Amino acid sequence: MERSGKKSRRRIDLLFNAGLLIKAISAFIEVSAGFLAMFATQHFILHSLAFFTQDELIEDPKDGFANYIMHSVNHFTSGGKLFVVSYLLSHGLVKLLLVIGLYMKKLWAYPLSLAVLGLFIAYQVHRYFITHSVLLVILTIFDVFIMWLIWKEYRFMQVKTEHS
Image (cartoon, rainbow, N blue to C red; front, top):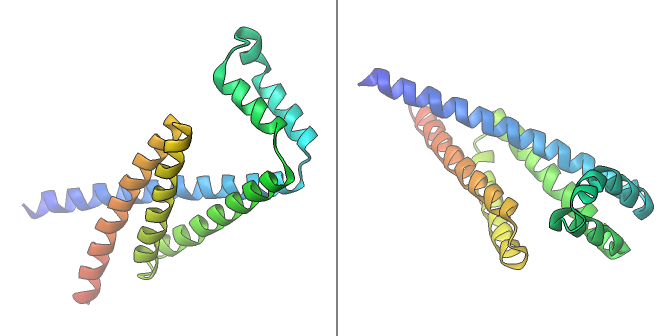
């Protein structure tokens, strides 16, 4: 019985570490995109996205996703740019800080990560009802799974600390 408990524990550890890696990568991408958005002009962003969506638009000029991206960038105001930069940098840096805390097994990082992820999830659900984006649903499901892993790991760390 203890052997299956250790197997289960190893599986959770593996999933937890894989989830941390994915969160770290996404945090790095967000911070990088935030800095890129901070310094990039609307013209540069428009031409870059046109380059990446041109094949899709040639194949299907009515492609909803590609047209949405191009339309959004065309209407990207300086206030919108400030929001995007602020959101990407703050979201990415907070995630990075929490991932480092979780990786280093700092007890403060577990409840803080749960609270922050809960806020991110609430915001994603709010945005879903505005945009109906399937990507937000997938991201939210992933974040709920990560919250479950953090909770399991936190409980394990508490028990481990009590027995030390």
